[in-house]
Length: 341
Image 1 (cartoon, helix red, strand yellow):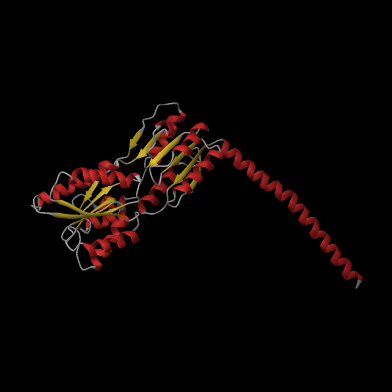
Image 2 (cartoon, one colour):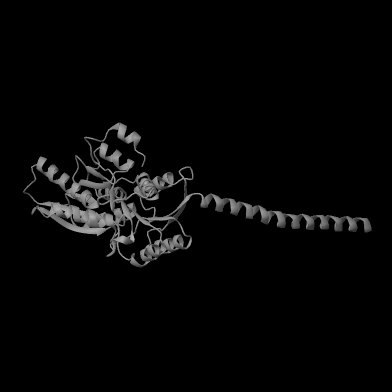
């Protein structure tokens, strides 16, 4: 009896010693890891990135482009945040970057307005802010260093000019043309720019009737829902202008379910934006008439901008990425195979 009891006590004693050793050396181990991480961070350029969300194929590719650019191999320590399409989440993320004393802040704003206060906070902290993909509407443009992205007004104009040429080919320069527009997130740079650009061309044509413009939030689900509403209200739609591919996918589903056809040989012409791989496949087979490219591969441009700032070189206030217009005539198999997004 006594032997078993003393053996049990000995085992308990050994376990207590092991626990104490683990607590002592384990805390030292974690401390060493934290210190190592801190040293690595101090030896690199720290960049805080607030992405507006992951609502589309474009946005996913845009995020990958940034993450592939700001790697430790390139000398950067990246702190990434997904705002999930909510401005309040971005404001919180940016303030977190400021409190962490990052070297640079990059963000793609959900909407254009409401940024003055937080950008002033970043400026007072001495942290340069770079806008990605979308712009902001502020009185004091010194609150951000530069903007890297697309010319959304030009994208809208490209869509309008394509429709001009297509209607001319079809001999429809005089008869009424009924158009519906699926717009993206209200107040976003892409929604505002593409709307303005297309309207600049549309307003020159008295026979172009824009029946309705409605927000579909850049998502396929909402695109389908909004398109169903259009079809129920307007039986004679000639053209759908959809401000991104994800909304286009949903709109095409709704049109086909209604018994109508789309594309090059269909009842309704489809004008889309972004030109992601899946949409270009549909351009190639004639389902989508034209797709105006919005290039998400902006990471390399952002990397170059920060490298210039680190070297003390001046940067321009705006950098536009290279983009194209895709139709059935110029979407080749090579383009489809090489598409990274």
